[in-house]
Image 1 (spheres, rainbow, N blue to C red):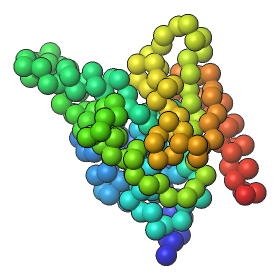
Image 2: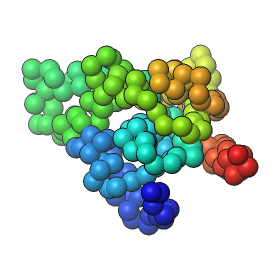
Image 3: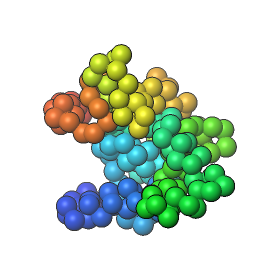
Length: 198
């Protein structure tokens, strides 16, 4: 049975976002802890939304819209894991860079897709029927490498490149860095309007 839609307060949303940024828990643990049902998600939230949909496939989902989401992983996660696994990585805390320790869970979830890691598993699970849309953020100038390329490269953001969703996703490319922008808001309005008529 489908539960009624809940409207979360801004404080609750901030609490969930902060927990995701801190990275002490995996995405699956965050979904369970906060009992969230996301359907429009930015960055790692898009991976969390797909996980929720896969684990609750009996629920009816109309659509999932992801924005700049690392569906195939994020190179920065691999770099963070590698830095944290070095023999002297414990010394990083002595100079105030303990973010590696706090972000380990998130890095583990978002490391590049491989056969035996989280994204490798998730990307090969059957996904429930829904309308899937990827909003892909590409750097403003293709010849200029930006922080966005390092955080979540454009090639990792298209759900059509996810094994279980190949050919089932609408993809919209926006010229933007990784963060949310005004174009995303306009696109969401347009996509949600279109969904109302489906």
